[in-house]
Image (tube, rainbow, N blue to C red; front, side):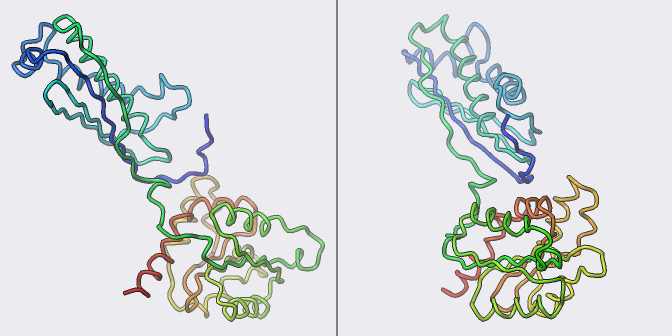
Length: 303
């Protein structure tokens, strides 16, 4: 199965449709009058669709088991066609489009089975996804390649050259995967003055996104939040609250991170932990949704 460990819980929705076509008007009349010998096709198909939705992961090998928060089955009759629409909602880490299509396809098969004794020309014409929402499909409408970014590693040992930087290089790589292409990179010691000089340097360069890694813990040399805090002109507490909550679902000590985030004038500043896992989890928790702040800024300039 595909690894969804690093995905976040979001509201995800999907609508799918299947169409059953009959060959005679008389068949539709029997359906509408509830006179099909095997019973009410709509109620039988609805029950089967709901069961199919819940059992999707049991029958399709690569589908993850997930909580179904809502499901609905609707019908429309058009001349010789019966359209079945299935809607599914979940709050989870992966989408429900296969669940919706599975429900629609089994409902269509049940209707086919119930109609074939009275109509030898009945056919299942199509099963298709109508719409899906949530996850990456609802990401911000902004080209990350337009943004200028910078990564700053805060570490005494990396700055001295006694330890190789892993977190900063990983951060550059992960930001690149998010579509950012113009990424500066620097290493500074765990020193308030050095951190502030680097922040001011990137402000002068009109950097859009500045991400620090390191110095957010509890040791005496962890001073990144103290160095950055005076420059934050508009704090966004929810950013690091989200990152900590995400991290704590995986490592309980994530609650000890003291990272802060917000705008330093026009530059968005994030302060992530100094470990590779902390960086990976921070990016997974915050992106691409965090890029919405630049969409808001862009739209505000156009107003």
